Image 1 (tube, rainbow, N blue to C red):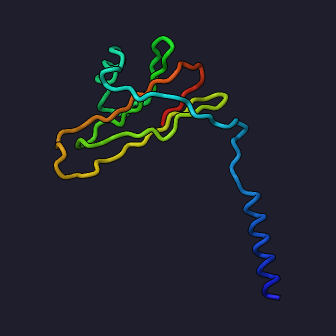
Image 2: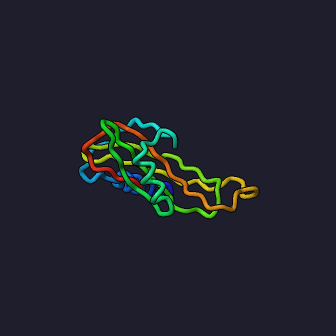
Length: 135
């Protein structure tokens, strides 16, 4: 009797799990988007000036230059140096382009400059008319 009850509970549990999930809210699947991280030297002059002027605050912006779209994510002023930024996702669906990054703190806090730093990342991709979400 106990085995039968146990199996029944397991079956109910599995059926419950099958019913759970996330729906895309009617949106299609996301596809990866090719991009290139741009070095400081390769950033267009006008964009470089905008970044320098706004480096102390968080930045989420796009910049278009011809057929290229620049995706910019800045994390504002940090108390020390040693930070880096990784791209977690660059993808698109039918309506949107998604650009998700992550700030990575210093690995070794000893020996870091005590001067503030202003980490930002610029990525370049093909121009699009889709809405862009940067996080």
